[in-house]
Image (cartoon, rainbow, N blue to C red; front, side):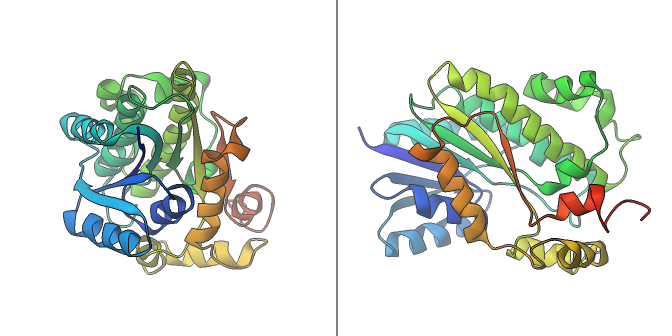
Amino acid sequence: MPEVIVVIGAGAIGQAIARRVSAGKRVLLADLQRDNAESVARVMREAGFAARATTVDVTSRASVEDLAEQAAALGSVTGVIHSAGVSPSNASPATIFKVDLYGTALVLEIFGQVIARGGSGVVVSSQAGHRLDALTSEQARALATTPADELSGLPMLDAERVTDSLLAYQIAKRGSSLRVQAEAVRWARRGARLNAISPGIVVTPLSEKELSGPHSEGYQRMIKACAAGRAGTPDEIGAVGALLMGPEGGFISGSDFLVDGGVTAAYWHGDLRPGG
């Protein structure tokens, strides 16, 4: 039976990971916008990959279930790359929670039912989740284990408490990483692994909007203060994704890899300290 890699979100980082782990396998590229998925699938086919495009709305259970059925019909689902998300400069807190938190929970729940033995998954989270103040153990457990369809009812996500999109983004990304850790236990029962990557500022069309948006000054400070002294590239994140999904990452599951050039270190202990 042919192996299938599912890529959810046809952005630059998802593509970079997929190109490293999909040789000889079938690739199902899913995006909210059909044109985006078709464009990436065409480029991958021209590079020798067996890729096809489809659509998915990660905020819809029916849509994600349909995607899982499409993938299973193509062969054995051995890889899932979830990189769909929205930008805090262009989305409301409600939308961020719906796409980045609920959408991730939904994808991991549904694909956790079809992932093959020996398979692996990667969720693209964000450095933003590592800059959120400490959660209580109850809050962390709630984000990690509350059934997907009940997440919107959590008091910590109440619209009156979270009015800032950047804060919502931090909560959602911390929640995604916690969800990966919890879901990795369930995936393990099928003999599969699951991890997260939390990139820093990586040059993509989405980050270009952030760098010119209302938080641009803060992002420029991050770039100047980090050890790398620059923004990252999708290929650098792709290399980490390939490690996690490949045989050399066979002993890694339930982890979140922070790949931010040293920004978070500078945030907590260096020139980017809050109030510093």
